[in-house]
Amino acid sequence: MATSSTSTAASPPPYEGARIIVAMGVSSSGKTVVGEAIARRLHAPFLDADAYHSKANIAKMSAGIPLTDDDRWPWLDALGKALHEAAAPKGVAVGACSALKRSYRDFLAKAAGEPVLYIYLDGSYELIDARIKARKNHFMPESLLKSQFATLEPPAADENAIAVPIEDSPEKIADNVVKKLTWLHAFKRGQ
Image (cartoon, rainbow, N blue to C red; front, side, top):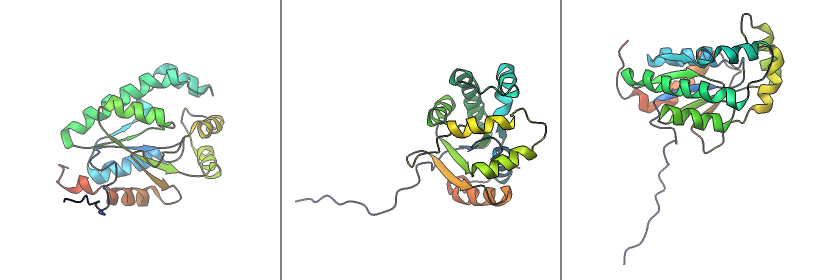
């Protein structure tokens, strides 16, 4: 009589194998600088979601008007497709996108047509408020930070995400994240 055995081996992280990595979080959490640092370490293209906003979206945010979901869907669709295309030449691409809600993260992955690993840049309102007050020349006004925190749904345990505190330097955060991306170290990328 055969008996069933249950494996006690640890399961791989759900994100293992993802070739699209997106730094996510509220405005001024460090998405762009951390995403760029990760991309440099992986010799990967970097795409900033801000470049995919329509002029209407930028005008709304510049005026302090929060975006609606209807404003976000075309933006997320364009970014997801661009990340997929950017990943093709080297097998990896890195992006930066607020991706505040699970529905946005799911939509972005669907638009990309493949799994996306989200690097959730987790920080307190006070720390991020201080950072946003220090920013210059960005269309996202400080007044929208409360709206972003109200919208934020941190990634759940079953999502493809790694949460990292933002108290460390962007370089240290990027180093720590890249160490976890072991499946991307299997081959050498061109410089």
